[in-house]
Structures are given as structure tokens and as C-alpha cells.
Amino acid sequence: RGTSTFDEAQARLAARNLLLDGGFNANSTSREAWIAVLSGLKSSQFNGETGLEGPFVRSTNQPNGSTDATDYTKANAWLGFRNLTPAQIATLADSIVQQIKTRGPAVSFGDFVNRRLILSSDAGAAAGVSGRLQAAIDASGVNSTLAATVKSNSATVADQLTKPKELTSTPTGGYLDIAHLAPNSLEGMAGLLTQGDLLQALAPVLTARSDTFRIRTYGEVINPVTQSQTGRAWCEAIVQRLPDYVNATADNASVTVDTLTDTGNKTLGRRFQVISFRWLNPDDI
Image (cartoon, one colour):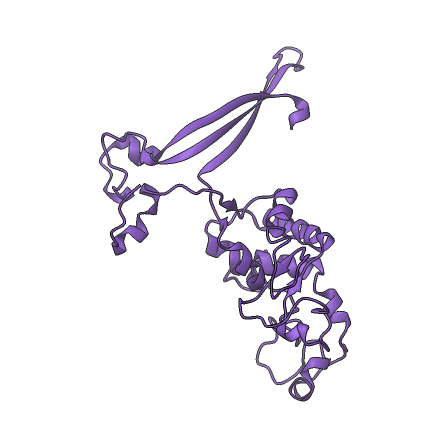
């Protein structure tokens, strides 16, 4: 709902007019869901190449294809794009889920993508090196095949300048701080998958929050005398957030939170409605 008239203020008031249709919550810890999302471009075509399983194209202007894109001696590694196999997609999905579980939910999409501004001495310092997606890529080993095709030795700064394509180790000397250098000199090559490649394909559907939630809860009854369990139950509700406030007659949906007049709206915010409800069996959990 809303109008088609442009108003700069509307960009800050999306909640009053919009619901998300088909968005994928980036905080999901479902391995199967991440496999499905990462496989979203399966069977697509690019530059006439068909049969692609997991293409991640850095730009729409990549002139080459994906064959041998993990061999730095081939043109496709520099001018083509990366095409992940189903096994690599599954491994990457596992790694993404692990990063989300380790770091916890992202409070915004920027928080999901970017590294945290923390000291290397802080707890969870790894979050200060890269965001969840890049950390997952690094941990998954999907770029290890490419790294194995190049020479790895103890590189100096001079080596990096004269023969960068032959080296994968971090150069030593000549730097004020080498704590966060790229792991090898092939960073940025088209055949080396980065979080930017993933976001090029996934950003339009990713969101750090959802309008529709699946909520599950559990309850049990304990005998106060014997302390034994006498009953238990599970239930599931699908709940959806609406643009309207809880008391829609008191405050219009266009009212910002800091100008609400109704006490209930100030406390509870926008309205939620139960879309469905069901009791669960132990096998459903």
C-alpha cells in the first residue's frame, strides 16, 4: 500500500507500507535452507554456458566461462566466474550455519555482511577479521583447489611485486601491520570465490529479519511429590508482522515510534497475527 509519489521520507517509513514476499532470513541456521538458497541459480545460463550447478558471477560483464576457473594459469580464472559443485555448496552451507551459530544473530544486514570493529585481543576476535560469509568461505575450503595450483613458499614483499601469481603465502617485512593481510596474492581473482560473489547473487533475497516467523514452544507437567513427568506437549504457530500498530485506531501506521500517543502501541509496537497453529508430536521436532 502507499502511493507512487516520490518522497525521500518514505525510505525511512517502509514498515508502514511493506511486507516481505519471499525474503530469506540471513540468520537461518537451517543447512537445507542455505543449500537451497546457494543453489538458486542452478541451471541458469551465462555466456552461453549451460548445465551450471552453482554459478557465482562477479559482474554481468565477465567475458569468459567457468571451466578451469580454479586454475590460475587459465584465462577463465581471471576473466570467467566460479561454478560450485553440489558437494561444495553443501560444505559452504555447513560453514555458513556454523558461523551464524558461533557469532549469534545479526542485528542488521550490515552486521551480517561486515566484520566487527573489535580489537584482536577481544573475545571472538575472529569476527573482527571478516564477516560471516567470508569467514565461512575461508573455513569451507572451496578455494583450496585453486590455492593448490600455485606455488607456496615464504614470500617477501619483493617477491609479491615481481611474481605475485606464483605465491600464496603472506609476505613478510615492509608492513606496519600484517595481521589482516589477504591470505594469498590471488585474492580478487575471478576464480577465487569471495563474499562479494555470493552477495552479487543472493543480496536481493537476503534480509536480517523476517515478517513471518515459525515459533515453537514446549511445556511439561512435573508431579511436585515424585518430581516425575506426568505430561508434555509441543506446539507451533506461524506468526506474521503487519504494518499496523496494535491499536490501529489510536495511531496510524505512518506514525514513527517516537511520536506514538497510545501506551499500548509504545509498549507492543506493530501488530502480529497468528496465521496457523498446530500441536506437534515428538517425531515432528
